[in-house]
Image 1 (cartoon, one colour):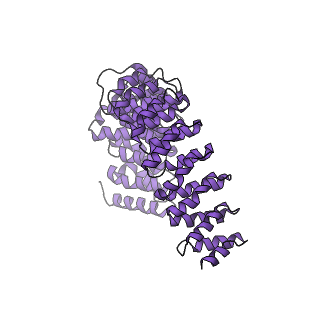
Image 2: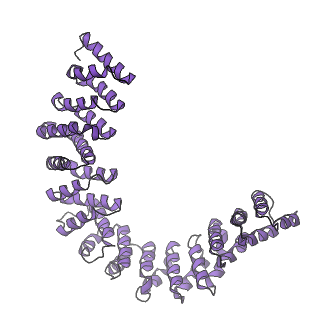
Image 3: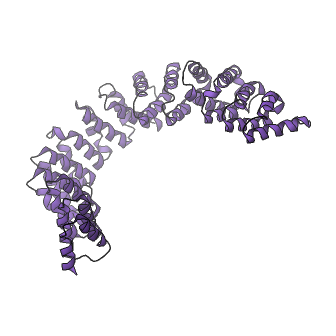
Length: 456
């Protein structure tokens, strides 16, 4: 049977070879068949190569990994990458077969073997073979070895990696990343030194390492480095500072330059850093900060939620500013959503009477631009103002009853029963003739109730 399979695997038609290999996924495999499959990893046909790879991966034995491993030195990058991916899927079985390639004469093969071992289970022999490459003649191999020892949590080599910082300047970012994976808070001075490095990439690695420490003693050091770190690293430093502030690690006055850097970070392209800036500015609430936050509404829903969370405790100052900005913005929807959310909080807190003039202005703004709003904002507006005096809600409800969207009209008709349908007779009479049956029936039913003497 084996001879027959081997013979068929030498077929000239790629589709025949692929189909036969696929039949071996769950069937008979011998060492000879595995060897033939390994040879087919270099086939000209991609489908044959991938089918052969799957045969070996499904076997997942050290024998199969040994047959696969030589292909990581293949001149064809597609074959090389396929072999590497396959060995990683074989997991622990691939560790032993890969070790000889860590000492290959070819520097690219050494690096690739180390990169693959970094993704596999750590073994004492594997860690030592990789550690021997810390003195490699090729800089890329050294960087790969540092990264791998960090990924494999090879703590016994922490000191050796840390000591490379002064000698292997080219590898400093790799060294900082590895030390952050292998160390604890005792390496604080090392990371602070790296944060002061002139290379922005080293600073970035150090900032990320310090952020991961969550050590309260880092806060003052990070504040002291705000002006010296690069533009690349500063957002990470600011992120670390805000995380520490969120945990309540500092009660004294914060420097004004921190506020200014956070305002600048509101323009970051990464929404994570924008939300961080919003949270951080919660420690500096004044008119300048409120205006900066309001100006950045509408970037993303998550950012708007973060803005609301910060400004909702400052409604008296924030609501007039938001209203003022909304009246000038061509796209009012984000600010109107924030206003509606804040009004809900004001009403829930029983403080609506403190904002009568502002609520009237908001109602006028909403009703005047009602048809420009999205359906969610229209619905939220109706829900919010239906809990207020009819004087404030009437114009919004009239605009909703005149809305071109049937779902909005129908919801507004339902709410008239709560607010008093007699206040909307003209709109209901017109809607009773609406082309949408649901709308006309609902309006006609309410009008019928009014004729029978309904007063709500």
